[in-house]
Image 1 (cartoon, helix red, strand yellow):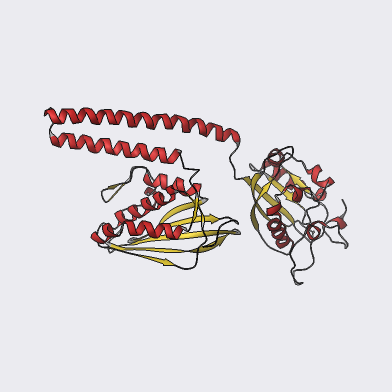
Image 2 (cartoon, rainbow, N blue to C red; image 1 turned 90 degrees about the vertical axis):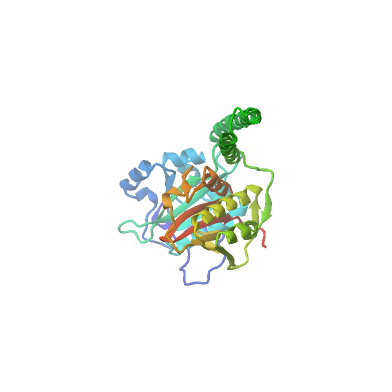
Length: 387
């Protein structure tokens, strides 16, 4: 491949039209001072093989490339496949994702310093797409006018083997939680008989009941963690679900001197949610309420933000107290922590897992000694419904 084979698109000062396959991959019509990747330094080839994740080094026009073994294993293709057919990569991308891919690479060719995107890609000799996340950035070589592009790949979907092993664990936990429930019921019945006969004092029986209820609650949380209701999805606005949770706790918060309010910065799209999403928000609100043992303010802010080319719904739950919050950032999602007499159990760990299933995440930070913030982010797909 000669130096004339590597080129970039027209200068970024021209009017930007929607990118096409031809824009990205047409043969060069003018000379440039860069050579093909066959002239790249030996060090680049050495570095790419040392990377522990799938990686590739592409020419700016994507007409030549170098892969590491992890990329070849992930895709089933080798570099030679794409040298023979320059449009092959685009052809293997799901049709609905090609526009975003072309746009990201046109931005790189126009001088962008980074591109991050997700798309579905069909590996060689496979019938099922894989969801790839691609992060790309320029690599400038000495005495070469135009950069090459480093690209790192990660697969977002779990492999069938991982899912199979997870299924075995799920079945084990289903049987365990069922047995726990049956035995607790039997113990409760025996304690009832002993209490009625007077063999066990009423106070002692109540202490046993509390322990039984605590174990039953933990077993229920374990069941929720491992067995999400995949067949119970519906499209909802997360802020509306959160408002319903606040209203359900309104009297309890008022009794503890907690003032609550919701601020909607903009209209939010509806996204697929299940009933456990409301459960997760309830746990977050209950934890935030426990932080405000001496009263205070609980404010919720809802809006949209964009990160790495993705759209997210962001919910910020802010707890403000007149005294210091009795919790450390690192303890919030630790199972069985105790906050102002409120025993968390597995509830926050379960809430964290539920949000992950909804393409989201939750973090907690103490902005001040008396102010803590839960930030919930939910990724919005292209097929999200407008509210």
